[in-house]
Length: 493
Image 1 (cartoon, rainbow, N blue to C red):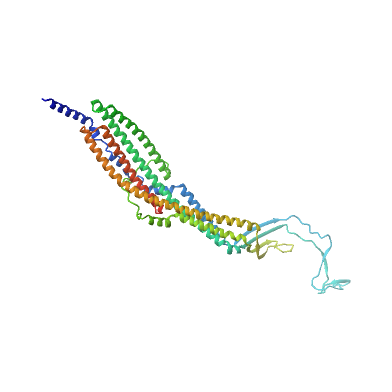
Image 2 (image 1 turned 45 degrees about the vertical axis):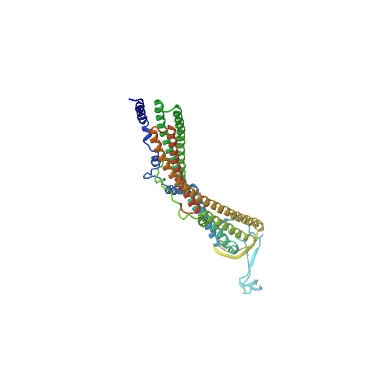
């Protein structure tokens, strides 16, 4: 047997030994491409983006606060409507008076039965002369004592009509209350949309953390396989100590990354639970989050999206209503510069009756009607300042409206280009993943045949892991961009 033939047999045996030692690396139990599918596999009863949006909206404390503010605005509107009604006041009173002395200092009071001039003539009973009234009856005298009732009872009803308010302020005040109520309701709806968008974004953030944690765990498992293979090759003399140390270093780094990924996953799950109002942070995926994302409907034109946002965003509509309310309130305050005219009607049913001098008293009714014209100088002086304050607030709201419109324009523009960039990245990431999968397959075959080094296989594995994360992030980025663009435009979440 020649020397060349002997060498060929020895090389063939070495290749067979090496192939046996590297079979685990060449045919891994956990393919990298299955890692994301397993981690993000939809489960029955799992949570979806739409479900997260609904639950976040129903449990948002900010939404509850906005809803309470809207209810308060509705109550103020009811108060403004009630101010158009005449003011009716009912009352009942009892008064106990202290004793009053009505003694006139002695003497008597003279009285005649018939009115007219008095004359002197014979007394009807005969005898002496008497003072006679015009009817011929004698004039008499009697003791006089005024009786003051100790107990006084009264039932009162008063009706007041704000005549000047009807003309000068009530209509403007009612319009201000209506505009404030509309603004509060619009802000409540806007907060509901924001809470729903926050729920979806928290869901996608949690799904992203699942993908990152799964890829990090997979990297640890693959690096452990590589370390075992590198040690075997080192013992056979086909690898260097540097190869073993490099894999050990990478394994330690991947374990740190896996620990960080697990912590981030728990944090994202807790944030999702807080957003959804849940007490526990235990969830499963309920939809295929790795399905490619399509562009938001009717989002090809940025100009069309901007026009749609100006008409649809609830925040801009709400601040316009707030401005209307403030200007209407300023008009209502101008009534303070003028005298106030009120009409009134009072009715009293009392015992003793008002105006009665009968000693025995008794129940009786009385009424009075009229009008009052009043002008409060202090209101005139302070009203000017209040009007200036209201007008300044209206100008502030005008400025805030422009700020919100600019912010909405920025959101729509950013969302439009973020969606385009995310969709392009999604397509590029899919191509990169296919290329990385093929590169790993080729390097494994070469490695098995002894034509590739551990470092080359390691690089290919790392590129595949990066491609997997890139694809998952690209898909989730496109879903996030779609949600944010829908919110910016003002469409339902």
